[in-house]
Image (cartoon, rainbow, N blue to C red; front, top):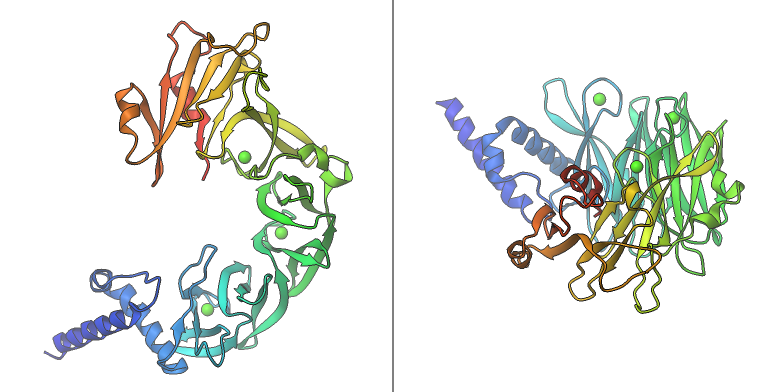
Length: 432
Ligand SMILES: [Ca+2]
Ligand SMILES: [Ca+2]
Ligand SMILES: [Ca+2]
């Protein structure tokens, strides 16, 4: 039967393509997946075959290294006709031309894929791919340059053009003015300083809005909601060490940094590693600062334990508001929110050998001492080392691929400072 023969030939072609593809690093489908899901696999192999036909057989597929899209084939409706085109990233020859190329593939009336355009990229690998409205944003990195390069591509009159090119350290997108459309955010070096740029697209015209910050080095950033729109939280490494945070907001068509304007930047000072991020998953970013835990520093101990205060930026009053307090164990990767009834009457000590953390009933009149009553202990172990804790009456609280977390209540139920089961569940957060 011709149909059966067609199927057999198709399977053989799929297998062949599979064998060709397995030379690449990040294959997103397996032989099983291909044969069990013939429609998706047919589509993928048809796109790949169209790319080979247009670009030649010697190409290497390029996979975006960060961001939401990690495949060498990224579907997106570039021309807005309701059907996805495919962006294919590849390189031709590392010796003669190391720059990434992009093939824009579309489907003809008969459903077959063909290469519509070839675009020349601006770096030797793809750092990330973003989409904002009609715009395709591709970030490129190159070994020889510390800064990356981003290009904004746009469809117009049957072709795709690069409409903007810029350097960047960080590239992201969000709705910074609350109009329902996403803008592109760029953090980049500018002379000896750092510049933040939000690129707004209006009726097809790009409006870059810029702000020079007073900072020399950006350690990281976070984007979070500030009430119906987003702000950029820039964590800055000052020369003296540690971290400071500036919040960048888009207001009335320009960028401002209200924390800096209000003279509050110094209030965000804390050690390196305490990043601005959405610690509790509510969509808003918290800025952490540290204060010594009750009883610390203790003259008889070299190690000082700290309480982490989490601050929320309030866009209305342009102030930092205290949101909650926590014990943040950076080395073991977890945070425990400290309940209000613990303030000033509970302290914490860490076992320097095992890393185990125990909270104790604390009397400010006496200070830290060896006869304090333990309330609850938290411990972590890699996946092979947790048995000892379980044998000692600890309960497994949470786990990641690498680490298991344990808890043991040390005081009786009549101790009001004991955490309830719900409190332990709700207050414990793994921070990866
Ligand atoms: Ca389309
Ligand atoms: Ca917007
Ligand atoms: Ca939050």
